[in-house]
Image 1 (tube, rainbow over the protein chains, first blue to last red):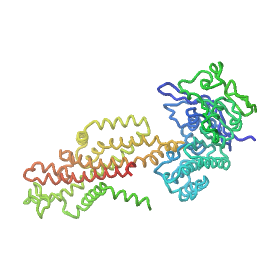
Image 2: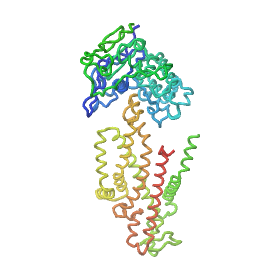
Image 3: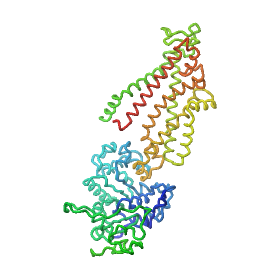
Image 4: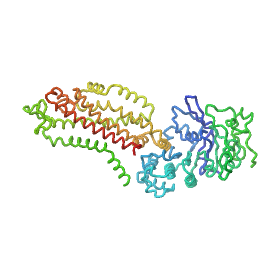
Length: 329
Length: 277
């Protein structure tokens, strides 16, 4: 099945200029997002997941702190070279974003309804009445009971799950083609988390848009995404279908990540596997493979030469000199 | 409406707000009613009644040319409170505009806030006198000069509040929605910082009344014979030892007004402070 490509990121690098010199937070990232699919991006804190998506939205102050290399194609246009005015039109209308903490991402002094209609007013010339009708309809679509009543309430009157639904409603009210969800369920408890993921899956099909799901929670990814990108220190280290990545991880980093998930029903007192060390600082990037200092399998070559992201099996790419073949799929 | 009821309860429990607003209300009421109480105006002189002590005919006595002090104080309150109110409104509008843009745009910030700093480095009375010396005296010019003196205070408060507000995730979320700077500033940041600005402005209202009185007392503010609390004290100073009431009563008027406004400001600050609920 050939799906239409919504977003094509080509060799994207994001560099921050700081007092300690320039830091390359994202280094040569490539990926595509297709219509009607959910792409998961996973990795530890500080591996460049959020920077990648913020770069797509160009939310950083470009005059001073940040510079981009590479290309981000969306609707046959390179977002990185787009004038600021056109970029503003794309934000929220064509590409939307939802954030981790829905409470702080909503204006505490504005009613839910006004915040939804604001999104409509920014991008369309709809009059007040139409906007209100659209807003209430959108609230119903994200599964908020009694939307006519909620519409006139303030964020603090809603529960965490409801607030995240409102965030999603605001993001989707203009029917974007791409939704970027930056850790949308991290602040929620597990049952609500499942509901929100279910909702995102449903809307993904109903509205036929692309979704990028950023998370550090592997369970969330396995439940939601078809394709997964694993990032480490600003680079994609492994890419493949969720199935392959979870059952036959090729990169030692992915393998260690999976091994460090605690299992319900595992033996009490058994020591949990961890990845030794921490993610190096961006100004102390090791030569060769970036994961080598923490990798159990690292050899001489890993410390010298940087491996490329290479096709491993079909639809499965790994950035490693010695990808894990033992599981043999 | 449970919310509304709770809010009323909170206001009623706050004694400062109650006392402050009663005082301010009474002063404004008298100011508005003055033309009906003394339809003949503040300039009627009765030469035979010069420097009379407070009596039934003249509640607060008369001044050196036989004008009724109470009448002049009430008419004076129209000037003094009027100047205070005008300054409060002007500083609020300009302070808010300056603060919003300075807090949001770094380039504006550097220029505008340095100008504000240099204005604040000059003692306020001196600056006001200097401005009046350039523009000449008169009620309008007093309002303009006192506003120039106090706008930086509001601007600074507003800017600080904007700096905190703009780091909030919901502002980033708005940017991600494609909202323009003006929409973010006026529809989203401004309402959130309004409470701190209003509190500051309520204090400036009081300070402006004192400043106007000081300027008029020094003879550079509202020119005689137009009465203001300041120039009534200025005129009374010469005959202070024969007619104490000419200095004491206007001072009480000023003190009570400023006290009331400050109480109101304190009360508002407590009311708006989320830590206090």
